[in-house]
Every structure is written in structure tokens, then in C-alpha cells.
Length: 502
Image 1: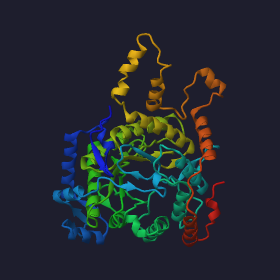
Image 2 (image 1 turned 30 degrees about the vertical axis):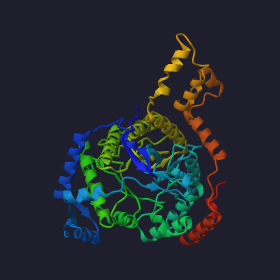
Image 3 (image 1 turned 90 degrees about the vertical axis):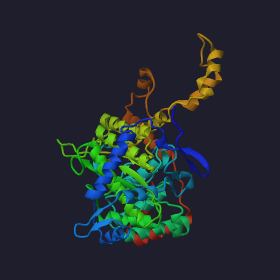
Image 4 (image 1 turned 90 degrees about the horizontal axis):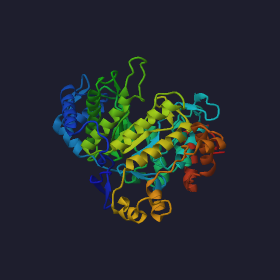
């Protein structure tokens, strides 16, 4: 039975926290306290590197120990405790269509696509090639159609769009072809202003963005124990406007972090908690998601082993630490393989299941990507949708109540009876049993009669069926006109007709 005793109040109603499930743990309270204590020791004695004179000044004014020569900042236990306690425990991530908005903590693990892949695995030819804008448009529409996917944005870099126009083009593409929540800009002043102007179009007033956060920020501290200027600018600009920020550490065990999993979690924790302390300098209540895509460094190949079991163990440890501090959590789900095959699926199933059973609030770096987030395959996206739907059903657990115990049904059916004709059977089946979308559950004779199709072939067919039958919610006409105007301003020379879906 799912433990639903750990609940928070949203809109006056009690909602179970995902992290309250406790279906899978790898640390436990004593180990969490040990990691917390070690983290405080690292922050107070070793400190973190801060590559910004302005932020060093800010931290000094807020009582932190600053060495301007080395740019090392040491933080006391009391300052870290105060910063963490001040954090918001939840926030609403708004979409342009409010029906697609989500709460960071809502009782379920929210899946999303792999991030900004440079390469694409063509579903027809199997060719591995640089991603294009056309690929991004198609993927965005597929993401919009999948109910297992909570987040929608262009997850590939369009290599055929000029670099100066990419941000604007990707934003408009996301907003045109999916109405699901999306991410915001970097701390770059031009991009941040562009985000504010897009918010004006969608909300009517940029100031409303503070109350209706559409585009959370996304940063990754530079391991080991570093905060570079670019990430700091992003963190502080979002904090100043009281907007949420995903803090996703990308440390390599044995490379940019200790080889021991506990040691990596200590260092990662120091990087996230120090980020919170920095954000606390400009906002009373930082809104952060505590996250990780940290993984082992494979000592034989020198690659980041995102398909390794340790990757998932670190992720579960991250989720437990987030719960320890009362913060929303995010955990990566990934594979190392370069194509759609069994390894890709079993590595991603392993990680997705562990994320959900551990109670991750987000596992948004997952669907469709492979090769450690470097490549995207729409065929894999369809398979990952099946993985996510199965994982979601498993994490829902077994409901035990008077109805499901079925004492009356058993009594009415009696010894040697048959449940197929009972009304309760269909009712309970529809309520509790998962229906496969892609998996084959036919007899061999039926399977052969239908063409003996592999999972990859069935995935391709489902992909084209979704593209044929699903139409994303369109932008309002005045918003669409405003987007076209911004395109002309920010993406000079770009033909807006390229954003249309054929």
C-alpha cells in the first residue's frame, strides 16, 4: 500500500507528497544526517569558489567569510540552516495553457524529455546526424501528445538555425507546438529580456511573471565546488524576480567528485546548499528544485556512465536528501547506448523505476534521449512513453480498502466459480489494471498474423499515428502576431514559415 501520510496543503486541500511514498530508499535517516554533517564541514572549512566580484560583495554583506584573493567563500552552519529553512516547499509551474500547469510537488513523478541534444536518430533511415529545426517541431508535437510527459520544449539544438537566432526560434517553436510547461532563459541580459517580453505576450504584463512563473531557470554548479559567473547571473536574476530555479549538479564520480557515492553526495550537497545561500541574498524565500544528473566516470572508456547502476543510486540518494531538506527533487534517467535497442530500454527502465519508487518529483531528463543526453530518437520517445506508463502504474502501488479486498465478490462467486461474468470484475479491471500502449500481449499466432512486428516497428507506427491525429492547442491570434514580431526583431533573416508543421 502506498504511504500517503506525508501530505502538504495545496489550495486548502491535503495532497500527498511524492517523497512521502518511501517505496525505495538507499540511505536512511542516520546516513542522511551524516551526509548533512559532512556537507556543513566542507562548506565551513573548504568553502566554494565564486567567480563574480559582485556576488562576493553580496555574500560578504550577508555575513559569509569571503577571501577575495582566492574567491573562496566559506559558509557557517547557521547561515546554511537559515537559507534552507527559508526555501519554498512547493511552487506551481505554469504553462501557456493552464490545464497543463503542474505543481512541483503533487504526488507524482513528472517525466520530461532529454535536454538539448545535438544529434538526432532519424526514424526512417536510422541515420545519426545533427539535429534540425524540423526535427524539433516534430518532437515538440509528439511530447504534447503524450500524457506521460509533463514538460514540453524543443529538446534538440536546431543546427540549421543561426546561433544568434536559436534561442528565439526554439522558444517560439515550443510555444507553437506544445502547450506544456517549458524552461526559461539563461542569465544573459538579452535572453532574459526576451523571456520577459514573451511573458508579456502570454500574460499581458511582465510583472505577472512573478505570480505566474512560466519559465523556471536551470543551472548546474561547476564541480568541484564552483559557481561560475554565467550560472550565478542566471541564479540571481531568477531569485530577484522570485522565480523557481532547477539546480542540477552534473558531477563525475572519480573525475570532478570523489569516487565514493557518499562522497559525491556530500560534494553535490555542498554545491546545491551554497547555491541556495547565494539565492537567499536576494530573495526571502528561494524557490529551488534539488536535482542531480551526477554519474560515475567509467575508468576504462573515460565517458560519463549514465546507464550505470551507480547513476541511479546517486539519483535516489539525491531524492532522499531533497526530502531531508523539504525541497522538490529531480533525478536524471538515461542510457549510454548510441541506438534504439535493448540496452537503451533496460538502462532507462531501471533508472525511471528507481526515480518513481524513490519519490522523485521530477525525472524530466529522460524521454527520447540516449547516448548520455547527446542524441534524440523519436522511436525511443515512444518506447520511453511505454516505460513511463508502466513505471507510473507500479509506483501507484496497491490500494487496500473495503472495495478492493473483495470479500463480498469472493463470497458471491464461491469456490470453483468464475469472475469473468461479474460486473465488479470490469469495474476493478478498468480502475486498477494498466493497458499497454506499445507492448505486444498477443499469442504468437496473433502476432505473426499482424506482421510479426518488433517493438521498434510498433513504436514507429504509433509515432506517425500520433502526428496524424494529435493537434496541439494553438496560440491566441494576438499572441501569435506578437511572436512573429519578436522573431523579426531577434531572429533577423529567419523565415517564420519554417515553424509551420506540414
